[in-house]
Length: 68
Image (tube, rainbow, N blue to C red; front, side):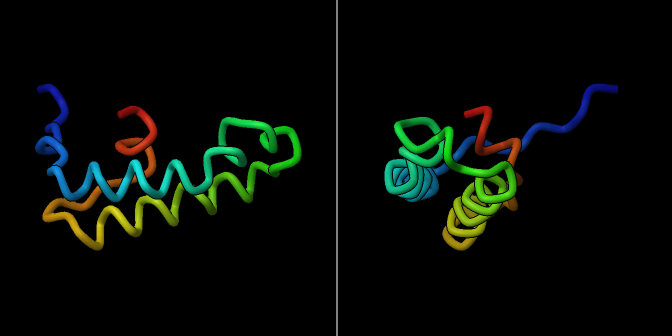
């Protein structure tokens, strides 16, 4: 049996996700990525997940957010 998929992201979830990723983009992908520890990146991703979950109907996890 295939794993159950989450429903699509809502417009509000997408908006929050994009805003949060843009805010920390240098630390996750850009100019400061070499100076960002793995623990700090995990913390940043979790903060994004928490903010997306605060506006969403369906709980998301870090992998749901990162693979989008």
